[in-house]
Length: 623
Image 1 (cartoon, rainbow, N blue to C red):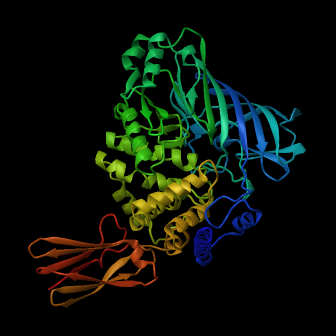
Image 2: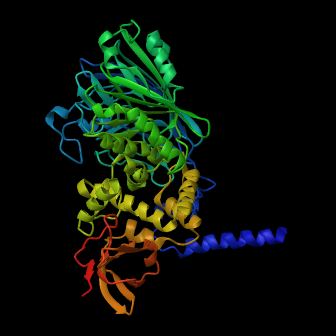
Image 3: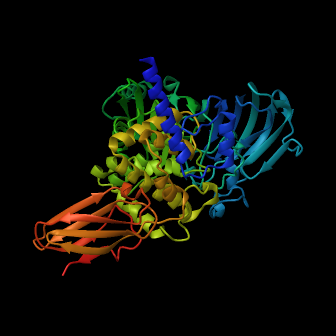
């Protein structure tokens, strides 16, 4: 029996190795070096020597709404789990994107500009640093290099103390003031950059489009605001009893266990007042564990709804919405956000929501942060739901899965496009059609850049297409030809292997190859690596009695499904559908046989959810 099991195991391992060996994917040298170092593998799993660094943040800040000023003190404990001795520490000063002349992916209005973030005091490992000493401090755009007086050896920790402040800008990209007393604060604190097993320090400058790549950290944040201000943030509020009066504390605590939405603060409550305890200032204390970032919003006139979500694993999730009275589309957002998280947890990806809270804050645009999203008001409930679903999908990618958006934005944005498709449709938000149309507009043009080109090198429509539309459609067709069960198993396995870590595209590709039991490079290459586009055509139709033989030509080199629609003179219709897998053997045309039961007068190729850059050759009329 043991010999029999050993034979089976050897066969399985040989099959996996054979799949990888036959793969036709380009693998860059830095990934192969990581494989040699034992931190990565060629089977989609992390290596035995995989490591990643992290920080504990203890931050105290005060908001001065009238002056639009944030003042902060931060104590950071940084843990070097790498095998390397670090001679420098790199911080990110995101607010420096607001400075005049800073490199940016788009234009800023003059009233958006500030002096950036100002570090007034810096202490590292007990040593005071002169922030003007250019021998030890090198600041460029959003990067801030600290040359360590004493290098940091492996398996050690280092403490930093930083005093900082900045002017809160008018609402720009992802953060800032929306009115005189309401703002969303993100990209705000001096943050230790990522040091990883692939590139070492991430020293890519933040210029706006390519968003985040962070370590998994622990946060204890104290936010002091004037008396009548509410604060909503990443993590769970630790001291509600010190902030709210009894009536509103009871509502808040009720919401933590309620299956129905509780209106914690209504417009009538704002008019009556007496919501917050009678102190000149309030200090909100939040805690979040093992998350890649921290963000928050504040206002003195926002409404507040909340509800509890009980997950199948027994965990509770506090789901909330904070919004302006005039944002009528937000009145149901707390309920809709809960329904969205139920779908994500139980259907697709079918992984329990990983955090204790989820807050939709009514700010501007649409931007995700751990446990809180910044969403502008939309024209309808359907659009509000669509935006919330997209941003909440990001709680899985890139937060539960620590993907590198700076290099591979499609590893989270594409999923945030695709994962909610089925959930959004019953609410009247049809994202498939819009995604296909947007992709068709750019597909095959010079701006259709393969997603594997690093996101930091893309901007405008090239970034949008490579990060959102093209990969979102690819994931949809991947699910289509794999089938729901196998696709779900592969996705869950990928998430199980890499949650709380830093997966790369190759980890994703190899995991799906292994679960599928075959080399899927015929699909990965054209969709993610190559300059390619989808274009199918009806090349020829032959009749033989009651049979039709339809030759479909793949004129473009991107594999997409084949759908043939047969219309009879009686207006009866019939459809033949083949998934994209029909092209996996490399052929550029197929013959589809169809047996008729009457007179067919028209054959049409394609559908509104199958992209095709030229639909003029998709209709054949039988005379």
